[in-house]
Amino acid sequence: MVLGRSPMRGDGGERGERRKHALPSLRSYRDFRLLWTGSAMSVMAERCSGMAFTLLVLWHTGSESAAGLVGFASLLPTLLVQLPAGVMVDRLNRRRVMMVCVIVRMVAVATVALTLIGDTVRVWHIALVAFVQSTMTVFYQLSERAMVRGVVPPAQLGAAMATNEARSRGVNFVGHPASGAMFGLSAWLPFMSSVTLYLLSLITLLRLRGEKEPPARPAKRRRMRDDILVGLRWVWGRAYFRTALLIIAGSNLVFQGLILTVAVVIREDGGAAGTIGLIMACGGMGGLFGALAGGWLNKRLAMRQIMILAHTLWAVVMPAAVFFRQPVALGVLFFITSHIGAAVTVSGMSYQVRITPNNMQGRVGSVVMLLVSGASSLGALATGYLLEAVGSRHTLMLVSGVMVVLAVVAAVVFTRKGAAVEDRQDSEPPAQPVPAAVADGSTADPLTTLELRRTDG
Image (cartoon, rainbow, N blue to C red; front, side, top):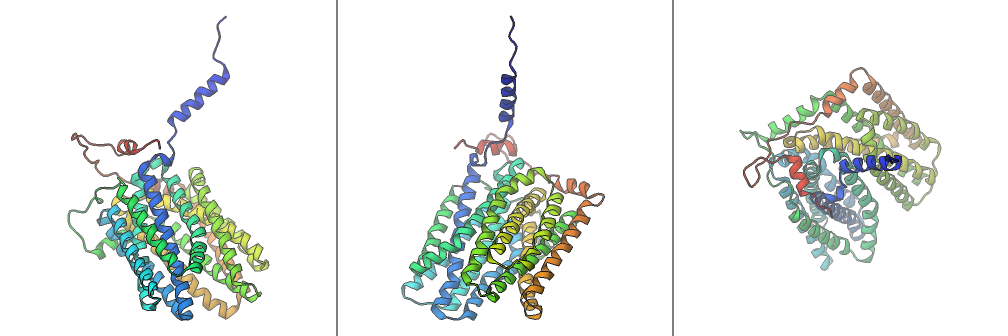
């Protein structure tokens, strides 16, 4: 009697084949682990000191205008230095840029801790340190995003971006409350904690074996203005990408308006200031889960489909804020909207990094961030005037109406004839640079080199 292979063994063989060809876990890439860990500590350090700046000024001066000045100083670099930073990130070694950023921020924050030993607080000093830290953060974020493509294979880029976004959302959820708790124990504690975290981040960057050489430079050095224009033209010349960016900028404007309006609603209804913090924490938790789901969604849907789905869901749930003003309902609303927003962010970042040539990652990333930051700033400014003019309920109706319009625009633009073709064209990977030579003089394949960096740890 001849025994044939049982179905169970056959199925197991097929599963074994799939496992054999499956990509390894992101944790198995040494450089990605180091980049992720170092950036997590860097972001946590920035959150701890950033929150403490405002608390320090309020508690030592009692001046709300002084606290506002410090807040303005910390936001200003996102508008002033984005485009020049993008050019510099494309000209320099990105790993070294990140190391310089960590060192400068560490020293700047340390000066605040030292002044607190003598119980001396000067508003101009705090504002200057906030400005310097935020400026270095702009350079750091652009450099880190550009480096991700060099430490994971293209097939895992979406998963890597989702993991990074989950890290940022998780740090946001933990960092601000931790900063407030440490400040309550001692004013210098959050600043010294930031210094320690920056030092640990620097150590991980020193161990990083990623990009050793700067991106390929043009034969003739251009002026910074010309390089900025190249980045702007590249983004503007891709109609599909440009349209998606403008729609996302519009939704960011709406959400900044929603955040400010909800704070006013809680105050009008006699709620405590801590209630606003709890609602924002619900949003942070939703963003964390959304980021974790973003990689899964990014593998299954094209960017145009994610855009349509996200803006349709936002348009459906946002009007609930007009009718349900209870803190619990608003917390649920922020959880849902942030969950969707994180998934869109993962999709957008993955798409941008994938389609952008390596020597333009900094410039294109800076254009993207400028649009996002500019929309957020305009949203907060416009909503303040709108609230004074028409009140909170009508403001909520207006921002909900704007979201409905954006959902309609997204549906029309991304379902029109040719949208799928443009999506595929923009998704084609950019031309790869000439592989670097290895020790024996032969050329090294980028993916082979990447696999050699992988460990099983």
